[in-house]
Length: 190
Image (cartoon, rainbow, N blue to C red; front, side, top):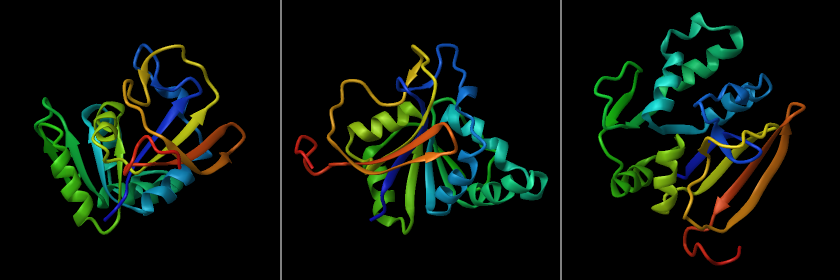
């Protein structure tokens, strides 16, 4: 069975976008090679509509991007993408399908059948997956900014114990942390 990994950029105070919906503060040239290497391990990504629409930037032929983006574009185009949206009816990116609702049992089946790890992006959809005990790891890229409000990176009202697996710096300012979620017994200390 593959792992489902929630990966996101977050502010120091735990937001993925500010109160106006902007997330331009989360860009880091040093994080780009890191994201490309992470994508090599992923066979399927689950998205919410808004993040998927943002990521369709990578749908053009890989050679149209700057050299450092070509491999990321190729990897992104080749992986399977499942978008959960009640409003999106047509997709433009290759290897993409739309589901009109989040079905935790269907996601569990995809995890069982997948030969590679899976990623999930978009706070709302990731929150549903965390609540359903589907997410195995959280990979957070913490940026040196306090937003004071906006969209939370992690769901409220859900408690899970985590085990720190890895941490390191990406460039001069971004901190990467990788946690395992104890799914078998969410309240047991690891």
